[in-house]
Amino acid sequence: MSWWIYLAVFLTSVFSAMGVGGGTLLLAVLALFSDFSGPDIRFLNLFLFLPVALLSLLLHAKGKLVEWRAVLCALPTGVLGAVLGLTISQYVPPDFFRMLFAFFLLAVGIKELFFPPDRKKAKEKEK
Image 1: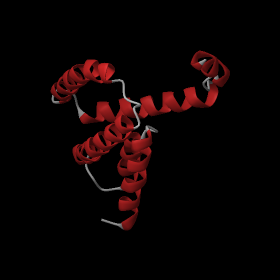
Image 2: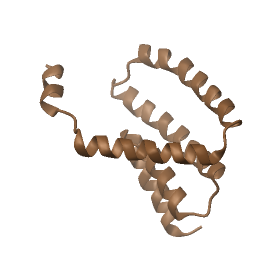
Image 3: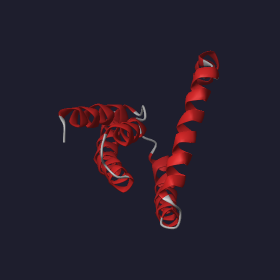
Image 4: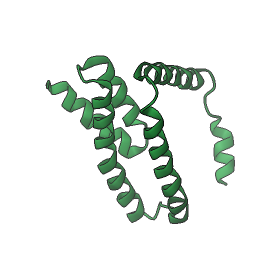
C-alpha cells in the first residue's frame, strides 16, 4: 500500500472528527485511486469511522456539547437503519449502489454550489 493512502486515511479521519464528511471523502479517494474492492472500501470506511466517532463523542462530551437525550433517541434508530441497510444490500447488485452513490455526491455538490446555506438566517436563529 502506498504512502498516499495512509495520508488520505489520516486527513479524512481529521475531517470526520470535525464533522466535515471525511468518510465520504475516503470512499471517493479509495474508489477512484486504489485497487480495493467495493466491500473492502466499505469495511475500511466503517473501520475508520467507529473509533473516530467514539473519540469525537468523548471530546464533544468533555466540552459539554453533546445532547445525550438526542444521542439516546438516535442510537437505536441508527442501529436499526444499519441492520436494514446491510440486509437490503445483500440483495441489490453492487453497481446499483455505486451509481446511486455517484448521483448522491453529484446532487450534494450541485446543491452546495448553487444553493449555499443562508448564513444570515442561521445567525438569526442562534439569537
